[in-house]
Image 1 (cartoon, rainbow, N blue to C red):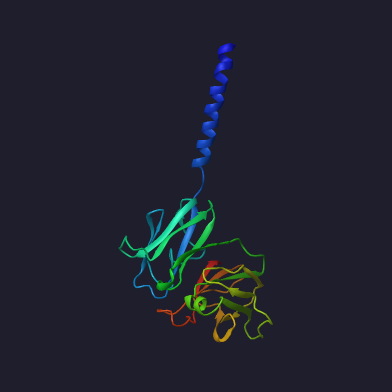
Image 2 (cartoon, rainbow, N blue to C red):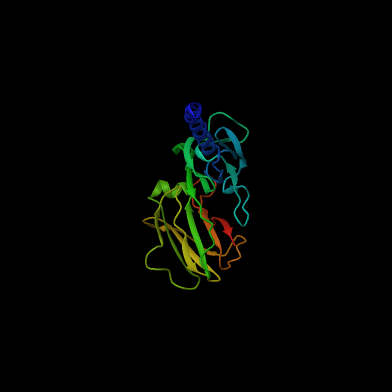
Length: 248
């Protein structure tokens, strides 16, 4: 009996260590995709996560992995991760300095590389939600990747309304800053939506376009992410956003 009682604490300690070990090693991977929105970058970019080159040769105004429906991602370790970007083929003088991001397991993220080269480009982290919309609805989300809008104002205003109708009195999305995503706008499905984007408080700076575009089928149950980007060089906003149909 005495020997059994002495052994019991050791047994409990071993069991506790086993539980800790299982907890530390059981975290699932995070899911990441990267958008390059640095308008004056001199080359395509390689993006490293924790020193590993997970994204290679990413062009400006492009997403990696290549856009698919449903959206595709690269699995990376969850937890506290370091993100940095280099001109493709190089490993020194990062274009985007190391940025620490907290990534949760089994969660999908968009990382936007944004701002002008002389304004310290950053890696901006946004959480995605590709849950199927309510029956009969679509969801539209806007990401501000415009360095120009950031330089000239506090962000962008966005009006979303059915094509052929008048815009609402106030924008659904107001003063969205660089590197930020709006909430998902849940809308009753229509065959086409018209979208107006303004640099906040500068009405003369406007772009307008219709959805569906860029291969979007415009069906009920669809989730679309629109990334507002600049033209190469960054002197003006591209009138055609990067359209990502994340779910259809």
